[in-house]
Length: 329
Figure 1: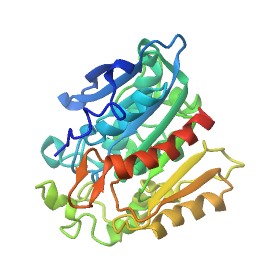
Figure 2 (figure 1 turned 45 degrees about the vertical axis):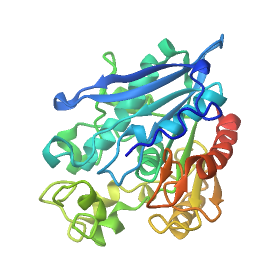
Figure 3 (figure 1 turned 90 degrees about the vertical axis):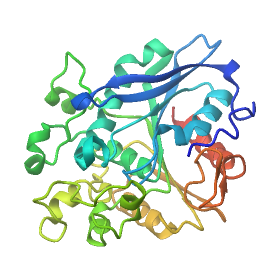
Figure 4 (figure 1 turned 60 degrees about the horizontal axis):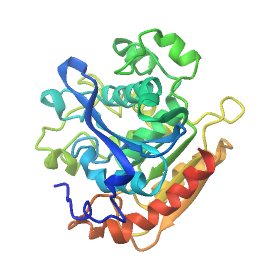
């Protein structure tokens, strides 16, 4: 599934430029090991900015390896520490993972990185996040809702997320009050940001192709007692587009939203809806369209289904993305 086609191309991957810590276990919720790959620049005297990456796959398929070429490219061509992160998929643990669980995983990874990244030559004060498709959605949850921290068992009442990893000297209240999930910039590539509407259209049924691809039985992603018709508030609570604070309440980090003009999974109009929601709240963002490209142009190697090629389609987008990170990190 995860092509190694360009891993031998030194313009994309030059292991002489970085040290790689592979499959580092950073948390094990219910004995399910969560891992990340950390790329650290060589021959750099100061701590470097950090980019944290979350893969796509509809919250049901794929792992971090689908973004190997992207991580390799950044580490080979820029002085950044790169963390390519795994989170639980809905299908994991016998198809019992709740949507707030996987968001808790993403929150926990940021806390772990902030506490430990100095060991890998990273600067915890200069962290940017990025993801594609479902990974972009996860990044927008971190960006918009990183102050919503609480106990997992209270989620249906508080709509707050419990990070999978907690610093040993911090309480949940302190993490929220001290804004420990704050990041400096966020790049969101061809994501969708409204699970409530997606659920109304059948996201929790076989109408959602990702259940088929995951060989998993469709179900409510927030538990059997909830559905989007009778419980819209809890579905909106996990939808970034409904959780953008006004800039007078809390200024979000700058966001770069990217889209692909031929994308039928996350079409341009969907990205622009999120852009308009940010604009309505006076939050800072930039928007960029990848012309004549399809969904998943950042995937490693060549993608037969979408007709993408990382070298032809991913690298030009990464140049735009890295210019944005250079400006804000």
